[in-house]
Image (cartoon, rainbow, N blue to C red; front, side, top):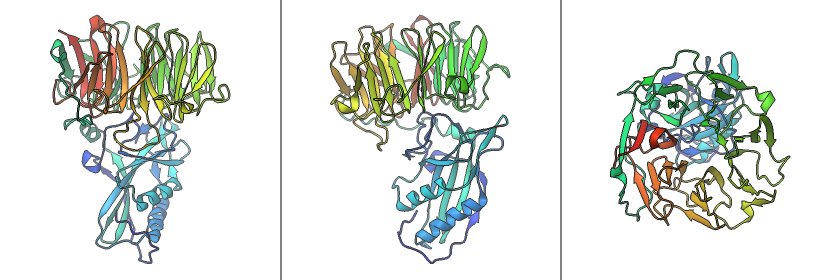
Length: 501
């Protein structure tokens, strides 16, 4: 939008209408980040632990008079050029009481007008989405467009099918590393097989989570169409009522614990599947109603990383770990955690990360000169030799490729290493998830925009994506172990199976 910071006396004619619009990549959509930011320009400060994407019946909405007031206010604050054209679309979180919070938008320049609109939208009146008779947090998109000296405002409903098609990852991968020569020497030792909605019974291609049950079935959690089951040969469409959450529920986390139980966090609750039965945990009982991640630990305990702390389940006892219990915790907003084989607890929050050792001594990494300083640990895994691997997230900082991110390693002998796309074979710095392959003794690293990384834990980096292999997408998320060394991978263009030849 044209940006002239003056007080305007030009009258603004307001045209307000709501219509169903197809949201495509042409509007600036990037790959999703943890099913949260659908536009590339992020706005910090929203509570994003759990929400659904334009869900409900009725859906979340902005009061017409309030939208009118937003347009009037922005027109009174800026000189509107009659020849100017443009637009910006905002993703707005609307909580269960109608409180809005702008989460992301499409304006790469982050203009003064856009910043003004963010403030006005955050003060506007919204109504929440209703799901199964209950008000829930949902995101909706509100667009503002300038043409012929007039500003119009529209709620843009998401066409779910078009939204799914828009993330097929059919374009070029974004490889930020311009110096490393990828030989991919082990590529031909694998057989890649992929399935998508057009060649199988898969309900939807977009997925961030997959897990293999104890009976060998793969659970493939799609972003828009619930969970599909796969027995290795065919996809099984679950009967109505098979899962306790709605078909379009946003699955935030899905893992298998040490006892082969499956845990799921959706937009409103925590669930456990054990002995062919589902159990839903009351948020009043356990203290959280959703989680960023669910983490099974080597000792059998389970962590739930949430907005109000780190919840631990151990021997049927629930314990909340937050700043009341650990004063050195940088924030109660915990994104990931892990108790390693030595009993040390690593906690990543949106304001920094700490480690509590086996004797209770706490290290605040913001006060160190380690790679973890001023970053959020977003994923953790451990190899057979006691080396710990961390995905780093530079929360609050903007940019597609931040050098503070990448892969940090804390070796068994206490040495810190940091790999990014400037000093190693990492193709990009932002990591979605990691998987330690016990069969091959190597690390698989999933990225968005840069495909799948195979790291041999020493000096061998390989990068597989949709332009150099049969990997169907450059947006890659969770890796899960199946039987006989087979791996399953969730992507934004269907399910990938990796098998040794």
